[in-house]
Image 1: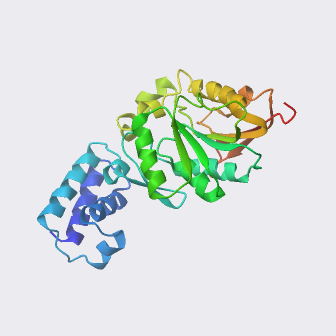
Image 2: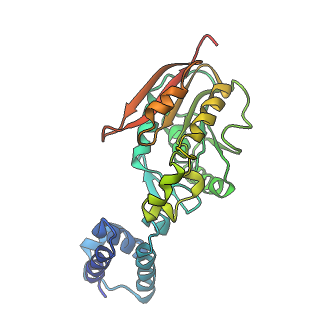
Image 3: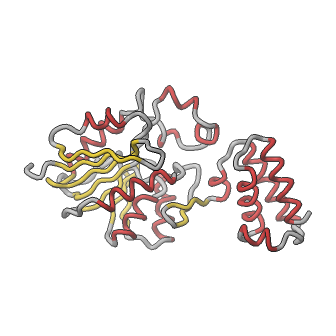
Length: 278
């Protein structure tokens, strides 16, 4: 079987199985099985797969057709121009979350630590540390997720301190200048309606936000008010339809509350400042 033939057959198989985009997925999985770039596939369509490559490719296709996300098969996901290690222990970083990073980068930098609450793979924490050129504290309740984050911190040489705790429970009062988080925000009743790739494969802990998807916001906003210094900033990602509810949680002692849209015109990020006067 040549690379060209394998790519064509895999594309047809994935399309029949309802996997989209079929062609791109086939390219990624074939390149991963062969250990080459996607451009190599097109430059060498006549190249024969060896037995081991064919076995690996067949397994990857089978896993994808069973609903396993491509990122969990390859163990890779790009975020903000960097490649991160991902496993089923962590939520796969989405391009939409780059809006959260951009919002955080645009905020003033008051004294105190930069804190990423619920870091998962560490994508937000690593990105902020490298883009800001400063140390970041990242918290995570899941030990398995922390292990993935630790690998990303090490591989990308980012100055990130990882802490296992629920939200910011072990962080000191008034120790932070900026708190950033992409919390779980899927309503419990909506989880069954999610795509199979999300519902059956991504960690429930990173998805469920309680009955209305807002439970974690209420706790997070309270914790942020405790650990931020007066004048410090909070930036959180928003789920669909949750902007006004989260805005309503950001009353006193919060000021300068802003909602920011993503490219699709959906409210994606909320930012707020803790009252500088205390």
